[in-house]
Length: 415
Image (cartoon, rainbow, N blue to C red; front, side, top):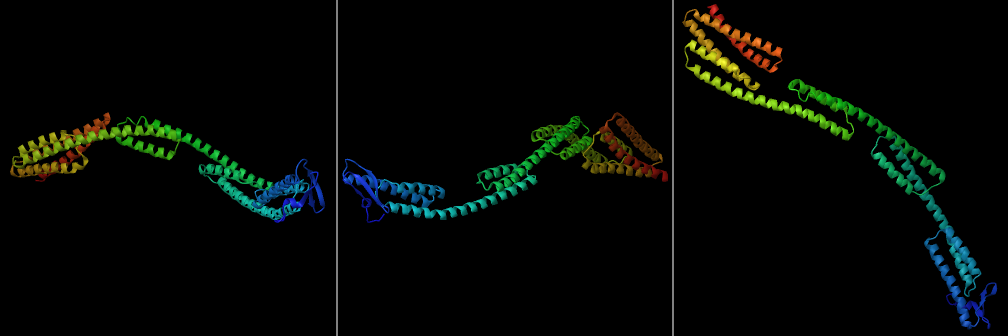
């Protein structure tokens, strides 16, 4: 419609109220408005034209903005063209038809653009699904049993969110994805079935270890039992893991048995250490006293009496810490050496009765050695390992003294 022409320029009104519209084919009767002025009759039909023009304007805007598909637009144009061609309205109807033609001319380009967009989207979707399939197949061949199941769940949600592609390609890709997911699920179930079976075996094995540890917990054979617990611990570590709840409970039981034994051993060792410390203090004080007592004694018989009394008291005292034995034995041996020197000097100054005294000393030490040997045999027979060890340590000292006494006696024999 020309900008200079009004809709009423395209029609007329008869005296009887009949309204006509002018078209390229000639005039066409569009209706009659009785009992109305010509202006009112014309206005009625021009409003109809304006409504059609507004409808076409809206259609044009929607097509340009592509808020409707080309297929929907084509249908709408066809319907609207039919309405314009048969419209009982007054206005530039050819202009409206021309506008519809121009709108329709936009559609081929939009159709091609949509085809291209769909093709690009289809290619992108195919590529995305292909990538997801390849990842799924990689997961299916791997052993990521915890992360893999979460990843498959994510991939499935992403797959569902993608648009459909052609049926053949989509079915083929889905078949590969689904097959990989099924294979992974089966392998995962098989894996955890084996793991659970192994954990049941480990549970049984550890229960057996606990059963072996139970009678050891109250043992007082500290050395051998400590070794047994070390062996059990090595077997425990080599066994592997049961189910977490079972493993924690089993370990608590086994650790409790270990603690029972080793706490008792520590307490016993502490008691022994305390007793040995007391023995060391007492023996050290006794040695110091004898060293003072013998310092100014020149009478051999008196010195021997002091020494014998000292040895008797010293032997009655218990065991001392190992790291103090060498120093203490050295001091005791020095006392024996001092007495031996005094006896040798006395023998040189006196008559051969000194030889008899040397023989008596040898006999004394020999008797003590014999007694200790019997004590050891008797303790071992009774299973008193501690008494046997203490007697054996005393025997070492007396043997040393006996050797020294024999050397002294040898000197008399050589004289």
